[in-house]
Image 1 (cartoon, each protein chain N blue to C red):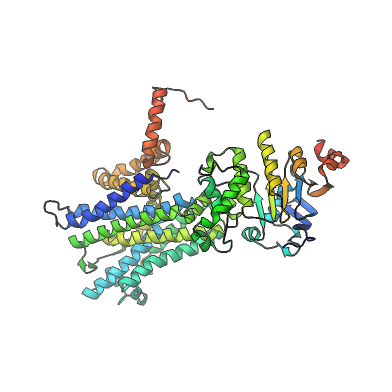
Image 2 (image 1 turned 45 degrees about the vertical axis):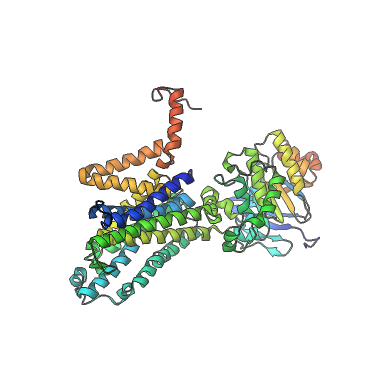
Length: 250
Length: 369
């Protein structure tokens, strides 16, 4: 059980510096369980950098990140963070192109997250139900035996979302899930994300398609130059003069 | 990187089984009128060892996308260990110290050569020591996330360093002259027909075993993890897999296989010297695998066998031509058959279709879309 009042993830006074470029500056940010949060802002605002810090791809200069209010991510490897419950879908669809759709999910679905040997020797029958359910959710049941490389762009995005979600993360990070999708695919993705909502999970979406964000997110955080410009509902963000000036109106 | 079909794999395995049965029957003249010349048996045995080396490289290159340009190191490591054992047994029989020890003024073998006295300890050493070296080197490299061409270059540098070391005469490994003068192999006179047949059969059996087991590994979940590393290693890491250990396991297994190949190769050629550590051998292995086709281990065997048979023939017939032929072969395969010779059937079908569409493909202007 998760403590109802502790945020799923809490970012405190985070600063990330690349050389002389300050990507994130003194940023604080938290997301509750059950919430879908949109993370928006102009290019270079620090959205992807924030995800990189959460997943351990980049190291902050100052500040800290807490999961469940107690687990400090500082010094944890990328792999340890996955085990702590952080899952990420990358901006560029990243699936294993030579493997079948089912095998992609089979590798992602872990019954023994701590033991590579037991995972490798697992016969797979126990995974089948979880994989079949996930195939259903992401709408790829018919394509299950196809090579992932043969999928369309949208299908690859769904497969990758499925690979991350099958791990049942507490914090699901989606980096531009609908970039390059047709209207119909975008709509299906919105439905998919709605179905992934759960009180045991919080979802953070980085996206430039503001209509999509408005459709799926409970609230948005607008970043600019590595700082929070605005936090609130998408409808309110559209009316906020700072957001209009700094992002939407540009 | 298309996997060879199961039918092709069964054909390959069947051929190896036939060879394994035929070698003692025809080699030892048990079936009248079939006696193979000892030269041919020895040639088959050598080619099998080189095929095994190619399997080792393909397991890690085709399997996980890690290109080693330094597998000569593990091959030679296994070879030196075997040569040490053969020299110790020769010494036990004749009490003649090898020349290189006499030249260096040693009154006897350095004490740690006793390690190579027993067949069992030597076999264990061949299986474990090169894998241990691979572990240390792989751990340091993979942990620092050294990948792609950078890793390939370092493997080559390591092999080159080992060659320079082994060329020194004061290291007690025979220096530039290497080790030779093997007396007996498993109690059979070295160079005699029974020993030659035994070694060739052992090498064929090793290739057969490596092919079957290796393909089973590649088809297992572990093999799929290797394929996932080849496709997108960061993605796999962000699914919670510490890819370091997956790569290390495959890397060490590959080193062991290469060492076995070397240990079987050296008694068949009757000598080992640092030339096995020359970068050219390690580079050639990559060409064999490319020619045959990566990723299914069968291509590695086919490529190694074809290229080396061509090499044996051509280096006798027209030695000066060999480097050009090898380079040309490598280029042609990369241009016309990027998936190797095993893909010839699929590709030739494409060519026929192309030809039917445009009868003069070479004259047709290729439009860039």
